[in-house]
Image (tube, rainbow over all chains, first blue to last red; front, top):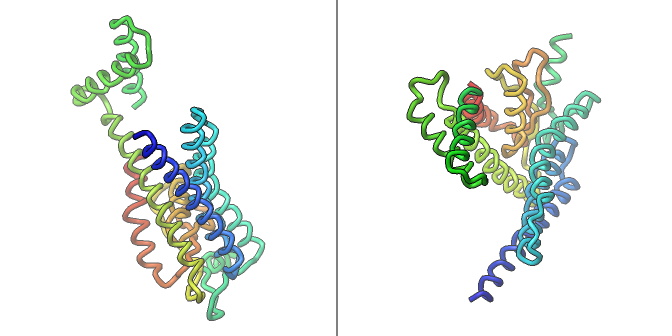
Length: 123
Length: 158
């Protein structure tokens, strides 16, 4: 009986770690594939958060089941990644990129940029 | 709201002393009893029942997590699509929220939704500029942000 529970637990840990690595891998492929800063920010900040939380939850369950440690640091890590990575850093990098004059990429060459338009208007 | 929290804590500590067991479990028991009392007497205490607000906050948190999952799956789909058939661009979203805290919450939520990323807030705090992966469905994005997020945030803060 306890062997099946162990097996299920191991499978859950493996799935969490694998999905985490998959999301991080996709994020890095996205950073290479996407055309400009803003679209790359989408990939780098969004997909990686789920990846990191997956790996951390996997590590948490592993540590608890195998060593009996309840690791508060991992939980804190997840919370702070969620609080900072997608909203904060993405916003700041996007803003910095925009104020240093990078235009959003467009497939047909026409940039659609309401922010630049409004700055232009207020001048 | 702060008055209700204080009443609740006082009831919890009183329960601990009455039961003469000074443990977390008895504190929690007292806390639940205090919350029940506040709920029953909510007509006579100023302000709305504060756990209502807590419940809304928890709901907002779950909304956060749901959007996080959706946006991740969405972006992974964009990554593995062979053709770059998206049309990125920045659009403006007029907002009704006023205080800094609310706007921070809203921009975070927008950054977590599939295909949108808040780039800047205008100086008079009236417009948020959002970079969208696919600008063609701007209308639906504005609609969903207005309907779900702004409402959820307003329920917590007002």
